[in-house]
Image (cartoon, rainbow, N blue to C red; front, side):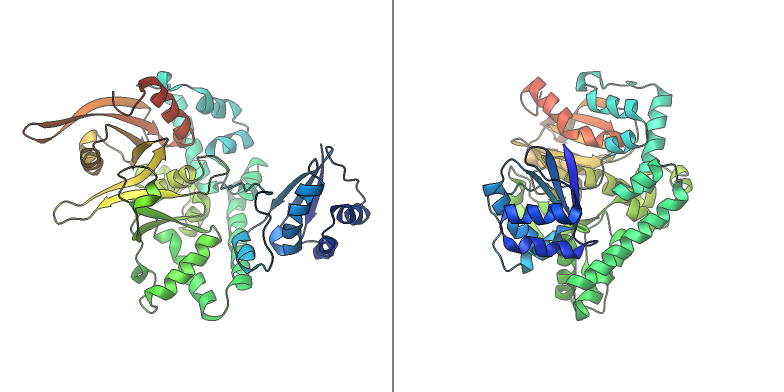
Length: 423
């Protein structure tokens, strides 16, 4: 398969070839301009930065109908803005959407030459994850690689820079370049006062991960509605993600969302570390779970859970909170796995510190939970006593944070083994 790549930002003149809306004429023009043959079944046509060429987006339907054997992939940033402003109808049913996030930890390991480490994560069955499943030096190596990932992040340019052995010093330059590019893009899609508010929220986001989002903590000089509009723009750009509160009584989780209560995630943990001026040395000096009051761990776990499902599913993530006098409780994340609701905590320490998780299990009558920490894998069977005659038996699967990319696979193995969340 031969690749023919078109970049509409670098070569804006290519836009005009798609005005014909005739795939035969479009391909003939592209062959002349690129001096490359484009043949169905033999060529992959890659349309990069397609947000700069709305005509090409509209033409996709004609490629599907008249050139079904030609493989076409389109990619671009801030596509939601282009689609919202487009004066054409999208080719519904003729284009498959792929929702892609930062490079996952396993792919990062592959990129830097740690294929065996990536393979162990991907292939080790749940039955082999028990106390001391890994030799201590191997676990320590995973944790050190995790620290590297947190500083570098999962954005392809940063990963490629590190993989080319250009060192951590160059990663900061890459991150600053990416941030500058996003700022330039905001100028294209936000105007006037809204543009300044978008920049304000964008700058504050890295400091607000891991806690309930309050507009007053962004600025006391703007109304909530104004800042909400700016945050919405960042969410459309996939720079920010809302983690919404759900009552979590069943699936779908979105059916019981409270839009007034939400947390946020940043686009990438590496960019977050850069914004907070955190280095490898900073991360080596304290428990990763506690770094920046746990916000980095929530960001890392969250961005993996967001894109841990099928590639064709829009990314969404939820959490649970119970706000009551003298009885507050919050579970970091809640996900659906099939028809099951799975609470997820990011904690260090013993089970006695899991008061919020226990409250959730009791209220929802659930008997299985997942915890991410910095320890080796373990499976705990325990019970919770809430009243004189009320005891709830439950299972707690604890996974080291570097295994978050295997969450769905391991949950599937467990459900197949027991047939239901409880034993």
